[in-house]
Length: 308
Image (cartoon, rainbow, N blue to C red):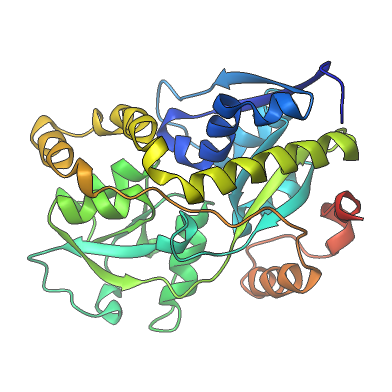
């Protein structure tokens, strides 16, 4: 066990708190303290629109405000390659009830669009260089050639959802709680993503292996608690959601709040070693589409020694 002098810096964005739910619950339940880790939280919720979310998280790690964070596999590979101060340390596999398991494209209920191929030459709202972008490319390329002209690139998911409600986009790429919000607000799911990609945890590359192991173990303790006791964290989850709900127009807020009892708590798979074949499959897919730098090997960006 590490000493109490091991301070871990974590950055929390209230627009995306659900990505850090295991850490937030782990802090409350004392799992990190039990591992000799002192968690220091930095609230990095943007005050204005962020041009590049990837740059934001890379900069947070470079500035030592974020020793660990997690993101979809695609974007994690890109960010670690771009930032030589970071490394991939573990993987949480795809799970249908996880945040990443719920990706889908949503259209207005009265839309004439009923098949994915009808989105050809239509605007689809995504966030650039994030899971929503890569997932939409992967899902739609089987129907028609996808290029950037198809995309209305917006920031946080509530903006993507509202762009479809307001008619600025024909469809929105959404996941997690936003899929539930979309259905509450009268949108329908056009297609469920066929992707089966997981989530990667990225650490600052000067973290020693013992501290990383302790952090992963505490986070997995929290995942076990969340998966087995969703009712015990519901009030906390809904309280954190209120920040996001407040960003919707007043009439939409009321609809969401009236449906709050139907909101589900996402589940997680335990953090584990990132398999090399999983990396090779995704890296090859991205490379074929010129979405990532060439010449990268598994050991260049993955610290697998954590699990030795």
